[in-house]
Image (tube, rainbow over all chains, first blue to last red; front, top):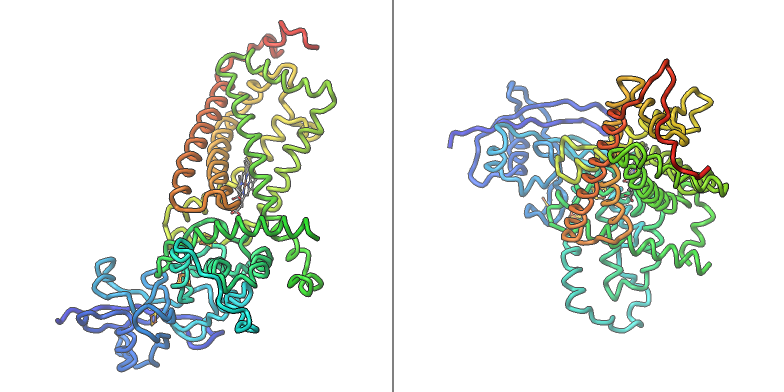
Length: 251
Length: 244
Ligand code: HEM
Ligand code: SF4
Ligand code: SF4
Ligand code: FES
């Protein structure tokens, strides 16, 4: 167990300061993942040059790929640090490279501010309205096939991977992102979500809504929860077109 | 309605964004229809110079009804002008990341944008070169009365025209085929991965077909012999029709 791993980390001290690289080296442990690496660095933050530095800031919570907090660019591709096993990474390339996500404002080191992600969910009203919910009685039962289509969408953990990889999600446009489109479709399929169906479709028809998607289909490739995002996007394309035509004709 | 309170504060960009993106897709499809027709007509030069002349004259019968220019403007010129202008707006919102995420879909997404830029340059050259709109600028080498000869002479007048047209045809075949594939998703026709895979094969077939037709046409015009007698272009095809 004397095998060592070299980790190159893109660091940044504050939201507006520039970034720089630092390298660390540590013994490989059995079952080690990237979050373990960051934990070890925090214990003894010494670079390969022997310089003692501030520990690397990072985000993590569940440590089992369900909370979405630990997304970062690992060897150039966005994924969760907690489920990125060092053994597997070393099979890809001899050293490990960690960078923060690029599509969200950086706070410090590997820590980013994912607020835009949650703002998008607000824009499409990705929730069940609770006001007066009690009086509405039990919602209609979903059919088996609707359940089977909806369940995968409900696994979204707001991790930001799909937005990070999407070429249309950036500062030049206000695209809400594939996750929000998919959540709008999920809540429009749920009987309890129906009361807000039209408002969600209005939101999808707004600037930065579904039309901003350019069909690169990166989102579905990188989603760690295997959510069929491209199905949601195409469904949203169809539903929003029909909705806007109806809206135009009823005005 | 929820949108009522929103309407007041919306900028034109916010208000017409969805409509503009849908029109961009629709105009892309309209122009795709024209390009298929255009390349097929041009490839008839491979049959004979007379066949191409015959097709051109059939198209130009619209002219005698005074319809050619209106039809051309409505179904070709305005659609592609809108598609091009708004296409540039879309290009400006894109941040391609093909090197990080080298997936098939992402490579096609990036190539869709590169091919758009190639077509942009090619279209400008092509319109100047062959269309009457190029006349004020010293272009417009194509004359429908002597279609095959003038087109061939124009193609053979400069050694770079052939490579330019080959590049233009390649970019167009790709952009059109991939564009039809994405348009089917945009409009929610092909929703699942399986249907998108099948439509992918169909669109690839369409692209390959157009590539062959387009390259065939380029070859046809490059090899068509333009007889030159004392600098005059011989007119061979405008003979036996009594149309005029
Ligand atoms: C031969 C000429 C052209 C044809 C037949 C054509 C056709 C198409 C079609 C059918 C689409 C698919 C629309 C959709 O996904 O809904 C498309 C997309 C696109 N076109 Fe064109 N186009 C042409 C020229 C151009 C030019 C000159 C530009 C601009 C410089 C351009 C820019 C774009 C862009 C940026 C897209 C992607 C749009 C998106 O992802 O939403 N195109 N084109
Ligand atoms: S399919 Fe749309 S949402 Fe997904 S990565 Fe491509 S552009 Fe982004
Ligand atoms: S859709 Fe997938 S990649 Fe996107 S935020 Fe949800 S879990 Fe993450
Ligand atoms: S820590 Fe929750 S997903 Fe990694």
